[in-house]
Image (cartoon, one colour):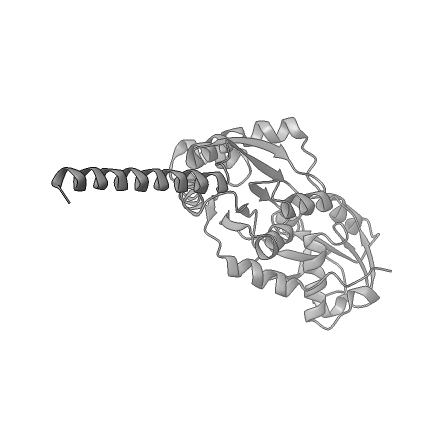
Length: 292
């Protein structure tokens, strides 16, 4: 075979190979999901949160801009209200990001729906059993047989109260328990003698001021995950890392501190491992307790 013939054959083989590689690259690209041009960032402030969509947008706008810069994609902030709807949207990955005060629903999204923990508030919170100053109730064991007022039935705090009673051999389903959404109203109801025991969040207004105002706390839960931020599988691992580093660094600058103060998280955020969410759900247990 002459040199010219060999050269022409080599050129043809290279051309065929190039065309084959181009075809493979095209086919591979067609099978890959397109990178999202925008992501939904949902905010859920819990059952007692009364902020409307405009309030949420105003308070979280600067945080949304920080998230956009970290993820390098447009972010739309939405007010996610309603526990059932929130769970449905997490299951379908309708929210790329969720920042939520109730911690059990985000924990379930991490465990069951492929979401990734990003950060949670540095300041943990506890579920408190509170009584008035002159109450004969001294410990959680004394709660048995008393009237108990909790936040919304099946809310994360209700579930924590159930777990605390369970750990002390008290069946919540056999106690006289009623629910009320507003924690300030729970404190007022105790002060006016309508119930014996109340359940509140240590980070709430009534939780922070109860003992200062003369009331007593008879039981505190373990420290719980506070205000977790989670990301759906739509957010890549590298994006999660950038976002985590950015959010955790907010408290290191004046502008970042202003953002944290505006959203009510002045202490800032920390990394929260996935196992912490799983362990928390294990402690809460299943929703199998029924109120009378």
